[in-house]
Amino acid sequence: MASTDEKVRYSPEGERIDYTPWTAASSAQNVIRILEGRWKLVILFQLFGSNVRRFSELERAIPGVSQKMLIQQLRQLELDGVVARIVHPQVPPKVEYHLTEWGQSLCPVLDKLLTWAEAAPLDVRDRLIETERS
Image (cartoon, rainbow, N blue to C red; front, side, top):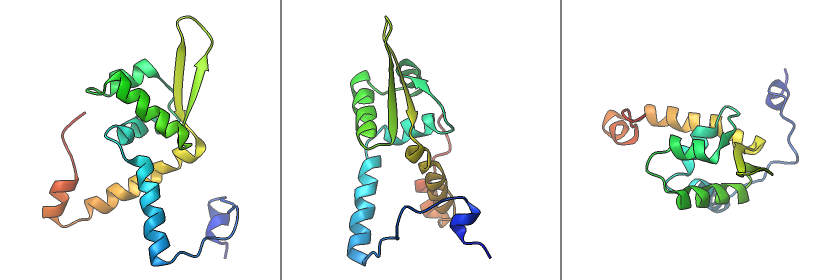
């Protein structure tokens, strides 16, 4: 029987870290900090599926976000290695954003998180799942 990494063609780069409850909680908190920010998850969902988006397209797709905040959130995601920025040397400047391979790997993780929320008891689920907004 093949191991999981052979089935999904994932080759681990090294041994898995042996977490203690403390280091696991601390590490998970550090990872969640990457996603903190009012607009970061909306940006990620706009870029999932190998979408390459110009800054102006992201700005139009995310109503309510200011240019300053969008730039700030994109820069943080870029510094964290989740988003890549491409600047085309032309006038006017053309700047495009896309998810890195590592950033794209967040898609199934967030899908699992939504599936987990959908399985919550109804009173909790109603607080977690947003059903109206485009």
